[in-house]
Image (cartoon, rainbow, N blue to C red; front, side, top):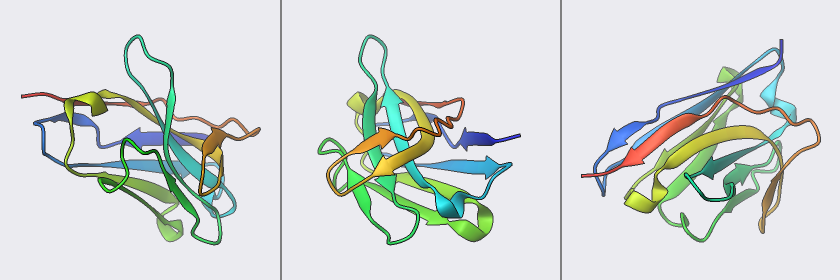
Length: 124
């Protein structure tokens, strides 16, 4: 069964850090670009970041550039999103998904594999 599972969300104070993980089962992540998306209540889904399958291409939304870092460990079949200097506006449910990734944008891929989401809340 093909599955993506996110973990690492939680409640953090402004300025704090979290690391999200996206673990794959039932398929090998090596061949897929992976994106992180988020959706806050009442807002549209936003593409946050992505990493390509092979050449290391990454993308970051302007809202997170310089604060978030995406990486992958193919040996562990996992993609990570390190989030530093978190702000209240980063509060959302974060999803990982197979994606089409370029330096300029991230969109979900036709494979359409999604995780169940992990809640990130930034509040004092």
